[in-house]
Structure formats: structure tokens, C-alpha cells
Amino acid sequence: MSSIPYVELAKFLNSAELEKREVLKITNDYPQMTVEDAYQIQGELVKLKLEAGHKIFGPKMGLTSRAKMKQMGVEEPIFGYVFDYQVVNNGEQVSLKDLIHPKAEVEIAFIMGTDLEGPGVTKEQVLGATAYVVPAIEIIDSRYKDFKFTLPDVIADNASTSRVVFGNRITMHDGLELDLLGASLYVNGEWREGGAGAAVLGHPAESVAMLANMLARKGEKLKAGDVILTGGITEAILIHAGDVVSAKIDQLGEVWFKLVD
Ligand code: OOG
Ligand code: MG
Image 1 (cartoon, protein in one colour):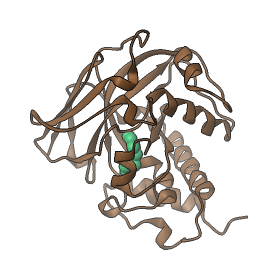
Image 2 (cartoon, rainbow, N blue to C red):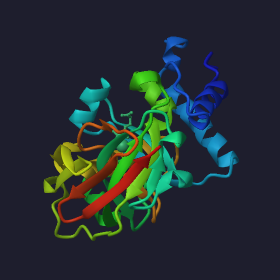
Image 3 (cartoon, rainbow, N blue to C red):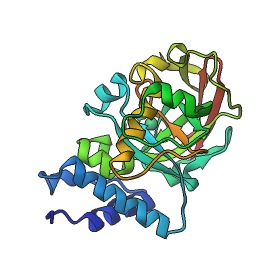
Image 4 (cartoon, rainbow, N blue to C red):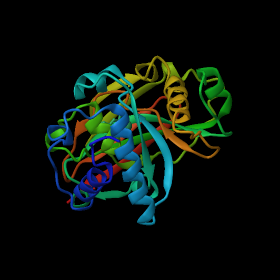
């Protein structure tokens, strides 16, 4: 039995989100916390949200590009879950009142056509099981002060998940080289960040394969219909009230939202 109070820490992080309040990282009090402990806390956090009536929209990957790992000072990809209440329609407003200190990042999302179960899942199997791809902007909002955390902290905090906006158009990936697609992120029409699909583990399908293999350790699988964020291609950028945030991905189209007071 670990000395780490999983449920209590999950409640602590959940209330930080609900009260839009930044908190100090939990490893300050529990420096011995392991990655396994952190996923236990994340699991308790997921249970709290399910008990509150929310539904899982899909699992997601994070920290899959060098840009993101370098920005956050964390060296390993992680997973978390997006919930139904976190999905924002394309072009809608997001209120800063619901958030702490949001950042935006551009991602390629996969929509699964068939179930996929690890271990041993490969990029090729992922591409075979994928129905569509869609451009996305993820709004991350770490509950930790100044986005300062270690690997276990960010895992426990459900990988900073807060809101996601998907583009209106879904695209079949056959014939597309997703690794070569350019992605750009703009604030108020001004280009801020850019990269290619390959920034995500060499190919974004590798991120989905890694997710399937990580979930297999928990006895979970990817399900047909899951919409999966593969991780920010570039650094995430801090956004402010009044900002119109948009992204374009070659062949996949555009996605945008406005952050209001
Ligand atoms: C962790 C969230 C990671 C991504 O796409 O890399 C993530 C963070 O940067 O706060 O969603
Ligand atoms: Mg992300």
C-alpha cells in the first residue's frame, strides 16, 4: 500500500479546476510519487468526473513533440482523458472565467474506425484502424501555478486537459502523408507557431500506437468512434481575453475560437 492519498489528491486537483484556482504541485508534499502513483491519482480524478455525470469523449496523448517536452521540461509522453464538457464547437467563444491561465496548441486528431487493443500496436495498425483525421486546437490549463510541474504532477492533473476545439471538416487519411502536413497557429491573425505532423514522434500515428500500448497496461483499448488528440506539434502559447485563436493544417483545414472575458 502506497503512502500517497490518491483520492484526496484527485479531489484537490479536481476542486482546483472547478474553482479555477492554481495550486502548488503535489510532488512538493510527496516527492516520492512515481509515474504509477500519478496514473492512480488520474484514475481517481476520472472517477470523480464520471460520478459528476460527465462522460469520457476520448483519451489523449501529451508531450509527444520535442517542442512541448522542452517547453515543459518533461521528457516523456503521457496520456489523459478529454471529457464531453470540455469540447467546444468550432468558432465558439470560450470564457476566461471558466479557466485559470489557458494556453493553446495545434494538434492532429484521429477518429477511430475500429477498436484497437495493445500491446504491440504499430503505426501501420493505427492507420488501418483510423477512419478520419481532423485539425484541433487544444486549450491546456494546468492547475499548477505557472505551469510548473514534474512528470508525475502533470499525469495526476490529467495532462492539463481543459478544452478542445475541432475543425468542422473530417478527412480520410488515405493518400495523405500526415507526417509531412504543415500546421500553423495564429493569434488575431498573426502567425505564432508552426511545424509539421512529423514533430509528433516522427508521425502522429505513432502517438496513437503509443496510447493504445499504454492503455493496454490498464486493460483499456481504443474504441471505434474515439477522437484522439495526438499532442501539440509546437509549443503551446499563452492566450488572453479578446484573442481570436486559429490554426490551419495543410489538407485538413482550419479551426478557431475566441477567448472572451
Ligand atoms: C501538458 C499537456 C500536454 C500536449 O499536447 O503536449 C499536451 C502541458 O503541456 O501542460 O496536451
Ligand atoms: Mg495537447
